[in-house]
Length: 616
Image (tube, rainbow, N blue to C red; front, side, top):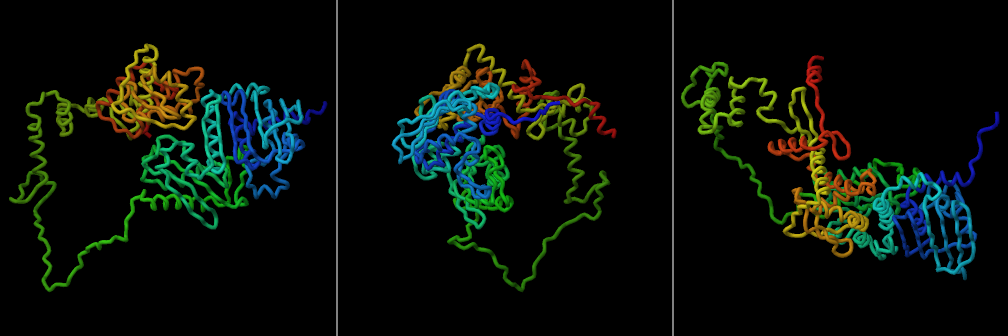
């Protein structure tokens, strides 16, 4: 039998490495922009076409490379950042693993133009699928310019699983934000299909945050500053009144590197405890400075997961710093002990007069079990009053029809014999259904107990209404008395423009008003909208996070996203009429059992199962 273990060819090994590092076009942008930062660049320009499917070009004014370095940069494990294993414990650069360019070159066509300031001419390199096709001198500006074309051209399976352009562009913008926020002193220019998305001038951190997320966020920022022997923390947090219903503007940076850390996120959220409702999320931009020897950033190929030596202590520092910042800026209600006026507190004074205690009259002969026994005049007997109320309760309903539901409920509560217990059990004291924990609706049926998820039920009802509107083209738009202006970040603005026609067909009247700003003039008549801008924000969030390919079923996906964004939330108290109306509309739907995304709306607990729990 021949040997079966063999070494992989370099081209295959590079594609495997690329699968770890390069997951989508945004991964290419991240790696190349980080290399530009490490080169000492002060200006970085990003050009994207078709959300990175067609081409990605990153230009910088950094140090550039020599012809030899330019060729070596595309080899695996080639890096200028580390020389020994000990260097891994004091990393302050962004890219250091030496696989970024090699991974990109393995799955795309790459053109590199680079020149050092002291060189007369630069170097041009063309690589396709890890194969160097051309290397020659060229005239170019100082710094480096890398163009990546036809990403995943030789890995069709990976290309097939890319999402729509709007989704992929959002991922790219997220990576740009994560690099631009911790580097406010560097100028960034970002273009998509030759349209300007970002023009971020060099400045301070507050200016950079406002440049990315809009000028409105500037009014909500509260500074955070704390230095300890273990860690320094700085940045900004958002005021509770500006919290949003969707997550997004929440960033942690460690030594200028973006990270995800659910444990530290919980520290921030607990600092806002009792200041925010459960479905609101505050903004925060927190920058942690810590000794590189106390962290491990090489946990994940994308380097977004970081391990800390003492997470519990750092959690306490973050929580205390955020809480202190909220208190300093009068966000948390506090007691001011430095009041100008004094608080008058009565001081007890000794007196020779006797203290008279109040007298309490009791009836020693009162027997609570003797209902017929008369009590002395002037004393109160609860049994007598209760009996009188029971005898005369019908006087309250004089003139009310005999079959009034409220009268029937009262008769049942006072033990009237005309209504038997079986009928009462079937109707929840005269009610067809009742709400449980502001989340579920319970309704008795012949076979047992039906439980309905109120949010999913409302989603199904709204979705079918929206689909009917889209099919009939009979749009009823409710115009706003005062049109509302909404400012979005470039990614959301691009997405809104992409689905604007479908929103107009559903009854929205939204007009573009300047750069990344829109005016909401009207909303669908089938919706009871009190906050149109919030509905639009939630709609975009649901649309971006949808697992369905928006390109294939764009209009249906818009209807699904709008139904989810507009449906009543858990925790909403419903009146009895609203409960009955919801049930009636649900069972008028074509598919009442499942939500638009295929999740179960209702279930029936059989009476036999309920009886079994009591027979154990």
